[in-house]
Length: 150
Image 1 (tube, one colour):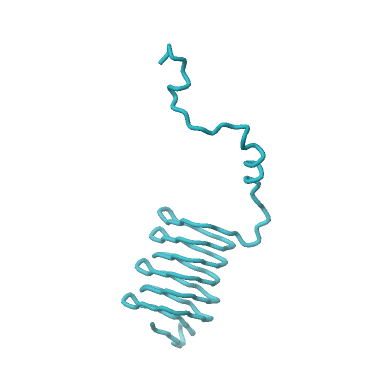
Image 2 (cartoon, helix red, strand yellow; image 1 turned 45 degrees about the horizontal axis):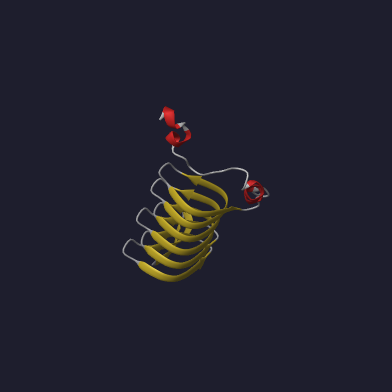
């Protein structure tokens, strides 16, 4: 794991925690800076900036950040204001977000929670209310025809 704090008069100051391709890290990261994961990370990350999981990167655990960009695999709980799942990205678990984008071929499987959402589903209420009124059995189309028309 490398932590960089480099000043350049043309670029200004940039801080980032980088987990390199050949690096496996277990533990936690709390930072005010960006985090870049190209290797494997298991644990918890808290960042006020951007967490990026590269195409070969793997993140297993919990992430709380402003922005997350997923190009590799994330398995766990993500709490972010903005989630970007790239075309190579795969996310499994729970996403808590204000905004989300999923590129074509990007993948997500799990539960989502939209921050500040006031719209609530009434599906369970309606399902319970009308459950016995509609027969939802799947019937083969030929079974519905009279015997002489088969």
